Image (cartoon, rainbow, N blue to C red):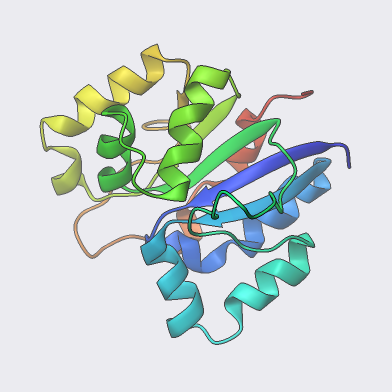
Length: 181
């Protein structure tokens, strides 16, 4: 594997199944590094005993969730592409506004300026999707070059509390990654 993919996951139910996109990306030739938002990390470390360790074992890399100190070395290789999945409406709106208050947001915000190919696979309900900030943020990020898989062929928002984890389109996100980097 010579291409590095940063899988950046937010705290939404599909984040409980990150082994699915990791294995699919590895099969497609990617060296996967996992970065979690602070809330997603809390889910993985407190609610699912051993999940962080399992992700580290699966990828061969530490799972990152916070900024390192300036004196600390980078422990991950530089990304050739990024996959933000699941992407919550909270992270979407902060990303579109240029907020970098977490490692995950810092990486994807900077990724736009560095022109790192980035695919985002949302996960929110249709009530959240009706907030006026959501379509504006999607438009802003698409105009900046981010591939957002929302709607037919990607993620279709569901009714509140009626999401189907088995229907989350992980493979569509893997297929949308660049063929070569």
